[in-house]
Amino acid sequence: MKACIKTDQGKVEMLDMPMPEPGPGEIVVKTSMATVCGSDMHFVDEFPTPVLEFAFPGSVKPEGLPMGHEAVGHVHAVGAGVTKFKEGDRILSSCLVGCGTCHECMSVDHSVCSGGGRVLFGCQAEYYVVPFADQNVTKVPEAVSDEHAILISDILSTGFGAIERAEAGFGASVAIFAQGPLGLMATAGARARGCGMIIAVDAVPERLEMSKKFGANHVINAKEGDPVQKIQELTGGKGVDIAVEAVGTQPTFEAATRACRRGGVVSSIGVYGLLPAVSMPTLAPSFLHRKVVTTLCPSGSDRMEYLCNLVANSNIDLSPLFTHRMKLDDMPKAYDLFRSKAEGVLKIAVTP
Image (cartoon, rainbow, N blue to C red; front, side, top):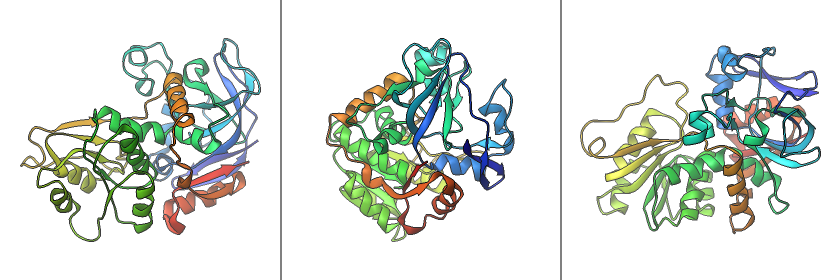
């Protein structure tokens, strides 16, 4: 089969790989659609190759890192012990798979599994394997498109999770720093949650325009002055109830802390791949009496099922996020395009 593999730092290639076979508790999925995520760029451009030990603990390591953790497809083969799925089922999986039985899976979330869970690597291929299938996979309803299903597997769950973990109430004011795909999902999540003033911050005009479609009622171009000052003006000098950091840089994290009101919540979903640490100023308004929460992608089959039901039974339309369509053979070009942020790219629908 053809698969996208990280072969060197900053480089991916399409290679011929052996067809996978399902082990106990695993399923093999035939890919219908995959995509490139911001996290993929961190793995390719920033994280060292030894990440393989994390990606494939205790198993035979492939040559290079199989890329991709967002996909939707049909069950091709079922391993021993899998009870919920059969060949032909249309499914999606969490981008982070958990064992389902450890303390963290049972009491916190599958995304922080300590029992063998990991990132679902290898989805940018004709076929991919999902471990712990009964705990991490859900069937996709007919009413949910491939485009929506693939978003549910990662950035929709993460973006909505940023708003949930901040405990946003009806009418809450929210500022989302960065309107890339993940930030746009947080914007859509704030609107779906019933928030009031939703402020989108970015430096790319096309992304700010897109944020209006997803629920923002105020947009701020970060190139046109200090966005925190403008947020203070919009909120009568108080700051927002919730400030979301959705890109993973020190300046945006710090801006989020300064934009948050006293007693408010800073909700971080950025990936700080190049930073050994992030910090916040200790002087008000920033450090004093703010709550900081961080969110990995809330995962597990129940979570995916709930989000499928939300999409299937609401008027949420996130399809405008897909600005480009490409074939699997062109994955290296897809990475180059996504990295460049050219042509207004947000999400790329990749099909075999």
